[in-house]
Length: 65
Image 1 (cartoon, rainbow, N blue to C red):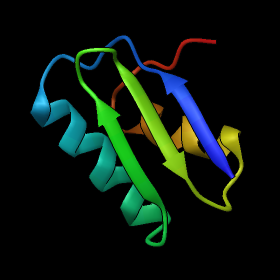
Image 2: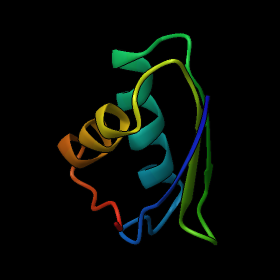
Image 3: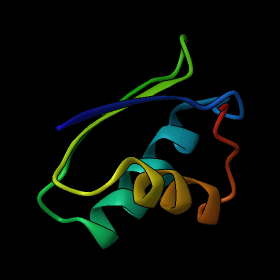
Image 4: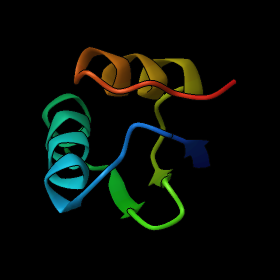
């Protein structure tokens, strides 16, 4: 399943790396792509959308509804 989330708190590549690392720590098989300019996180995973949102929020970022 592909999940696409708007994360307005992404400001730089370091933010992208933090989010990617956080998702990989929970879901090592996930394919994560962060578009810093568009502030979009795309995740291919078997995990639920809510669980991915929680991981991103736990990493200190905000997910738009």
